[in-house]
Image (tube, rainbow, N blue to C red; front, side, top):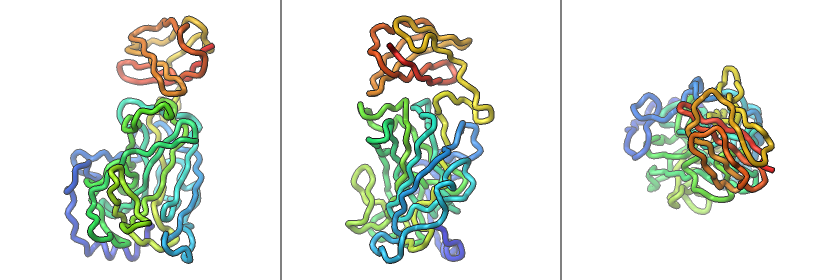
Length: 321
């Protein structure tokens, strides 16, 4: 939701003090986790997106659904062009190459907020099978004693693990390790990302809640065609088989033979610290610092092989016969 002719005027009259919460601050402040779209950490950008629109105002269907932008606006590198989800609307991304739980954050979601405090929020969920989705545990410390208006201000230090925490050109990062361990989610083979608009209404039955059951106060109502969370892009950091955005170079790790029955060899010039085999349930079998492994006891099936070296982590698929 961006109505600049009104917002710029109203925000210019707003006196707002940032830095009251427990979490990372906004762009330009020490300790921020905001990721600029030109960060070398990004090795790829999502290439597809499907959108299920929400209403412009969830309690008044006569206004119709959000309609600004289309799903293609959410693909490719962040550029400020967006698709508006509307109240409770959602975007589903099916990844052409799986992402995995690497060191630090694994991907970032971009919105087009034009200031450090005019923020529109969304939940983020992931799946490794396209059926069971798991939501990042989010927290909102924004006051809930009064409704934020259509152009209200949010302190980013009061927000954690919600997309839209940062302004245009800066992504909100997500770390897959923040998700609870479960056999239904393979953290080393994430195939789907789902982004769902936070409905900012603090009154039941329309309110959205964080991991603690606290109502999330978000600018509302936004009865415009550009209602709700405006998805710009999703930048990927740890992608199976891709190590560089500029070259999309293949991993310098070779698994042989593949498929394998008994003995697996890893060909590489790098020093290996550890090798992990992750099955479809997420169970991990770990080997320390070796390039030759007896894998005869592994059950037949598909595995994600995670090879850790001093400076990088590489991920490849392996079939065990």
